[in-house]
Image 1 (tube, helix red, strand yellow):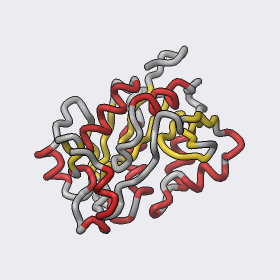
Image 2 (tube, rainbow, N blue to C red):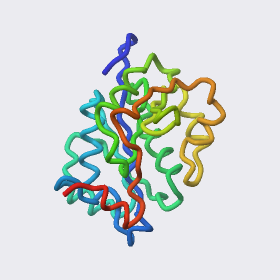
Image 3 (spheres, helix red, strand yellow):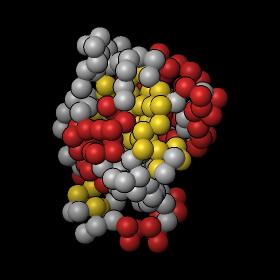
Image 4 (cartoon, rainbow, N blue to C red):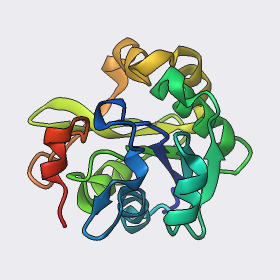
Length: 201
């Protein structure tokens, strides 16, 4: 999808997590509806309107490349993935530099309850390179989040540890366009063995 300035929105999928509480199984390869979770997330971004999708890999990146069909995606290796989501967000935004994208729609691989409809709503609120848009669940900020390219440097500078973009979003809370998606999406994470029951065969 392109805006009035002709700049497309790229999808940025953070899929580097090692699933520490899942016995070290990389989240990207957890199976959902018969395929690796990473494939579902890529499809969500594509269906929502992102032609270009960058996927940040970390834990068992070689296995993910081997087992998941990620044709047409730009695969970004994050060797520092164990330092947390912040490093993956930085690696992903850096990989989008110079691609001509006007914004990045950021999705996490371990939230299969968020589908194309929710992602499409967030993308639909994109107004240009200064955009800052977040999904909301009954008014509470969640994923996915859209960052206009003018904001990437600021997001990257504050993305440390597992906080990802949280610090940036708190600092710029008054500028965020919230888009309610609670009626079409559920924002659970797949973090523990118990959560695996939320995946579908």
